[in-house]
Amino acid sequence: RVEVHSTDDGYRLGIGYRYIYDDTVYRSEKFGSGSTFDDVATRQHMLKTYAQGSQHTCYVDPASPRNAVLHRGSGSIWIIIGPAAFCSIFVLIGYGMVLFSWLPKRQRAATAFAKKSATSGASSARSGKIAGALFSLLFIAIGVGVTNFTFVKPLKLQQQAERWMAVDATVLDSNVREHRGDDSTTYSVYIAYEYEYRGRTWQGDRFRFTSGSSSGRSGKAQVVRQFPKGHRFQVFIDPEQPWESVVQRNAGATLYFGLLPLIFSVAGFAILIVVLKGKTGTRRRRRRARKSKSFQSDTTDPSELETVFKPSSGHAGRILGVACFAVFWNGIVSVFVVDVVKEWLGGAKPVGTTLFMSIFVAVGIGLIVALVYNILRVFNPRIEIQSPPCILAPGVAEDIRFRIAGNVQRLRCLTVMLVGEEQATYTRGTDTRTDTESFFSALLFEDADSRINRKGSFCLSIPVDAMHSFESAHNKIIWSLKVHGDVPKWPDVEETYTLNIVPKELCS
Image 1 (spheres, rainbow, N blue to C red):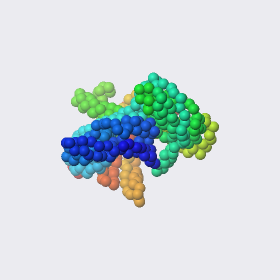
Image 2: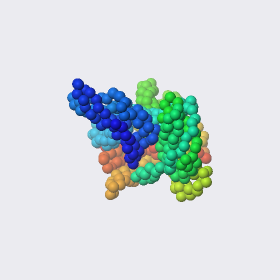
Image 3: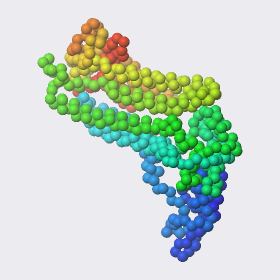
Image 4: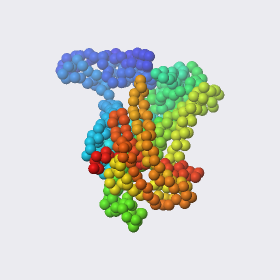
């Protein structure tokens, strides 16, 4: 026996069959995977395929022959790998949080403090690169996997449908379906129809190959009004599988919204490139360091100088971070903006929705401006600062040299500040906040001439009674050099170089 029961979400297949195993007759009502579905095309396909009296192969458990199923499913490994890969992202994030909160405790030892400027973090950096590579590969896999379902498969069906034939159909039912979520409600077009092919009646309800729902009810309602009950129109069917049909076989520009998940893959590739370039850059800097001794004599060729001090955040990292977030944010917002525009073009006036979406559009525009700003900063002159010849500690004074790479004529004023800051992290209710307060500030260098020298020096002196660099779970003492350069009609030079100040006992 075979029958299809209607449910709130679609349909459920009810089936009963008998089979013989070891000369014994058994009965079962288990179908297996795929017994629930939400379209009439699958409903009629099920009724045709598993018609009463038809014969099929079932799968029996040899240890318990009373257990059997008719359909075991595709057995696709992505059913397991997909969710596992997605959850692994959060596992890696948690691992990174634990790692970065645990490592500073080990680095508070005196020996680690003394060696930090040269060799600390080698093993942690290696672990970080491995974690970063795995993290990026997961992003790439998720982006490609989801895009396969949202774009590649609908595109293949659309191409195959170019060979489908058009037949007359009659609308059985049409309405706008609501899909209520926790925070919002989305809508989709539902049109059920009936058609004849080779003397047999078939039913279908697929409007496009791209499925899903979105905000904006009026646009969907306008489509539904074109297909009232009893309306005659044409649908496209597959002559080889007449139960496969579609109203619009060309999804148009909406098909390309299925490419949005590739944002995850792009972000993954970007992270992977940063990780690989970081590793290559470290090897290159080590090779150059063995060839030259930076800033140790005035006769050294500036092209051979090795910059040991690096800004706390590089241009590539800032641009990559802002770009990924801007693409992700604007990609998501654009989906809703398109729906709002369609409603306006359709004659509706969604003023409230437009005002609400304008806030998110403004944020997206701000992200684009921030991206352009950070890209322009790449072309600024670069301040390269000498690595201290010895360990820095309170009461120790060192002459530090620097040079300016790039077009120095663009600078109008250059200052170098020594800043000591304290960061405190605390919890207030359910919120965790971090406050930063500056407890020391001193001007080390200033050149306000219209023609700034390409090379210079300043005396770096840490007060004898000052606190050394420190980091714990809730407090940090951070010493840094803050460099500021005025560039007329262009983003200014703003760089921060973090210093490692060790306890003065280590220098005694």
